[in-house]
Each structure stands twice: as structure tokens, then as C-alpha cells.
Image (cartoon, rainbow, N blue to C red; front, side, top):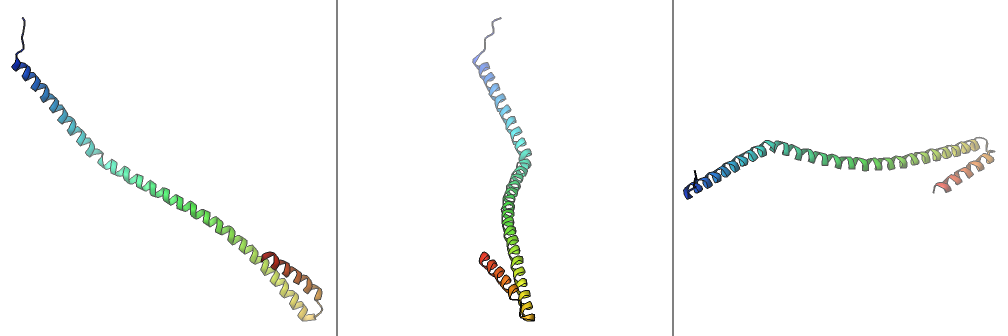
Length: 126
């Protein structure tokens, strides 16, 4: 029972193996194409999500920058309001002293005190 393989049979086996390889590679190619097609919407969605996340980061940075500017402006406005209140107080005291002097013409002491306060305020603020 010694079987011998002829050249034709060997050639036939080789062609069968090659046909099997071609069939398997074609099937793998089809599966890869189907998977690629199925995942296309997910890839598009992920790209859109990444773009939105990038935009949100940019907006967050702008908001933080705006908050810093707002805080700075708020402090500056608070300081201006304090200065305005103080200057209004000095102006009112000066007007009261001038009115009192205009009424009785003897209120020189009050005028001098008010003048000193006014001068001190102007020197400190300017």
C-alpha cells in the first residue's frame, strides 16, 4: 500500500490550497469592509464630540479670562465709589461750613477746620 502522489495531484492540491487562501482573504476583506461601514457613524460622532469638547474648553478659557477682568473692574469700581463717597462728604461739610458762615459771619473756626479737611483730602487723593 504504497501510494504515490503524482505531479498532477500535487498541482491540484496546491491549487486547492491557493483557492482556499483566496476565499478566506476575500471573506476577511468583506468582513473588514462591513465592520468599517458599520463603525463609520460612530467615528463621525466621535469627531463631532471632540470638536464640541474643544469648543467648550475654549469657551471655559474665555469665561475664566472674563471673570478675572470682571473681578479687576469690580475692585476698581468699588475703590472709585469709596473715593466718591469721601469726596461728597468733604464737599457737603464745606458747603455746610460756608452756609453757616454766610448766615452769622462768625463761624471762622468751623471754616478753618473744614478747609484743613478739604486740603488734606485733596492732597491725599491727587
